[in-house]
Image (cartoon, rainbow, N blue to C red):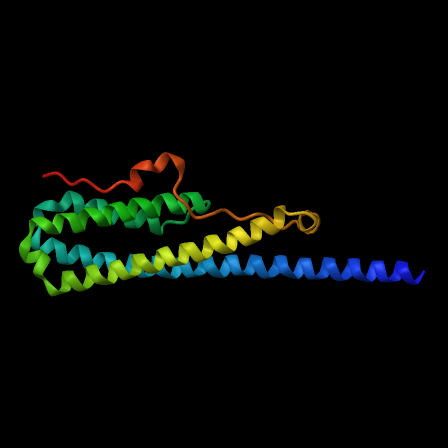
Length: 184
């Protein structure tokens, strides 16, 4: 009888610890996603200032500027899932690259303090977004691994813990991996 009580106690303790581990990992994934959103918001706030600075020097490049604003608006819109968010973020990154490439043709713009500061801020923000994505993906990996491994997968299924999606490029977005080509 004592052996049965010990086995039940160990089983209950294992279930409790595993359940709490899933809760911790799920909350870390949420926190990591929140970090990404904070950095994306920072980038969204910097873009109008960048566009206004470029407008003064390259007014006839309105098509490029409109693409940046359009990509920003698409990125800010609510998305159904992580893949849609990643797709719109990658489009925005490509649009921003085209503005920085455009500055090569305008020496006055390239030397402008506001433009240089905004470019530095955006580069810093992009670095922070990349770091936040890596942190998010590491937490997703930990959650997904635990949800798939035996015997914790039994607890995951019992309590309906879902695997999370990685924040990555979609397979059909190979163009986002390549350098932006700007032609005039």
